[in-house]
Image (tube, rainbow over all chains, first blue to last red; front, side, top):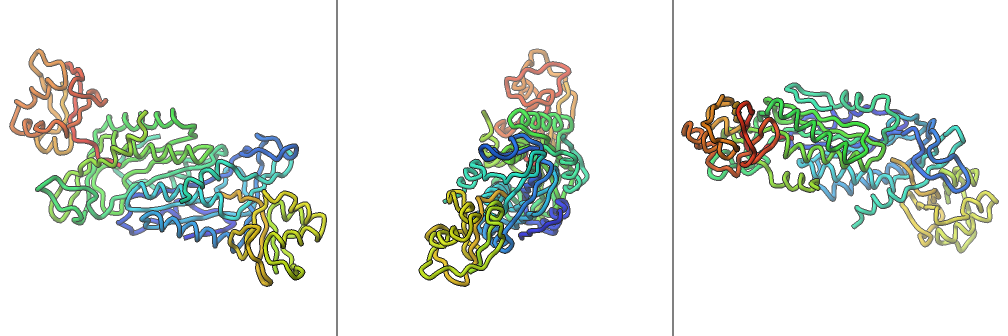
Length: 160
Length: 160
Length: 83
Length: 83
């Protein structure tokens, strides 16, 4: 299941619903991404706040419609690659403060290998394919977060 | 933190306590292991229930004292290897029914790579080093679960 | 044709969504970009460095050679940074 | 010396924990096992196949060559299957 929403989510409630009544699940792997309080990127050369400047908040913009379409494609791809019982992707948009949850991905399977790998795959692909953009609000001004080469590399591991 | 207990745990509450008030955490990876309703092992040759026989319950025996000591060592090793904010290991013992939670491991870090790898490391090492033993209760009788070669292989990946 | 802009492309064009009636002969994303560049200095600025611009046609990723036709939804945005 | 048995080693010996006063000259886990084998048919059965027996001395993993001395806590068990 995928959900794109402005409001926060409750990881415990999501987990409970995710595995409720299933006795064929051996393992659940879950990842939660949170807003950190410092800049995780190199600002564009010569402009914008310095790396390490305090992040007071960020705003996540997205492309409604395409986001859901891409997340569903990513989820379907995970099910093609691993024998999964279930998957869950929740991604927020809008203004978020440091410490707030941004994203949850989870995968359950009879075996822990599949659960771990699918969970990692979901977040790696999501980070390079789902149309979200972060703008960070710092004391020194706003700056659009640059895409990370490390994210491209992480996603490329799953290309085949 | 590590905990060895008979009673169930609430993953949502554990997660909430785990990241509360932290704004330096970028990602949390969590794994939950559950009791499955079928035998996940090859029974000892010529005796015991056939593979695939329905598991009605299992009992987890452990070595009090050594269990805590080994889990603390595993946790300390994870902190040596990755830049982690926090780790959590909860392992239950006693009688467990299919669908029940057995174990929770979690790791938080500024970066998702470290959170994922440490979480995987914790469960892989725990499975080959923490002194727990499962006996499965099936319609055809009880059988001690054999250690899996795949678990040894998974743990060996982390030897260095 | 509906054209959408996101993130700093929206900031540069000053537009989130516009209806564009491209002149005849425009059959690909690349040709559409050439046309859009002529619409305003903001548009020209948004498309100054194509290496940092991504495109989706009808909500699927495309490239400069992807065909476009009247009725399509074409979106331009930077590399994504969600998660 | 306190000797503990877990899982099927406990079932085979019929004992979870026993105090053992080994005869003089027993200085390693391997020598202790030779002594324990003589205590009962159940003990002999438990130690029949040493490749599936693991040992901990004072709650740390050891091997047949690990030293043991009076006052130690020595535990025997199968390969672990938690998680």
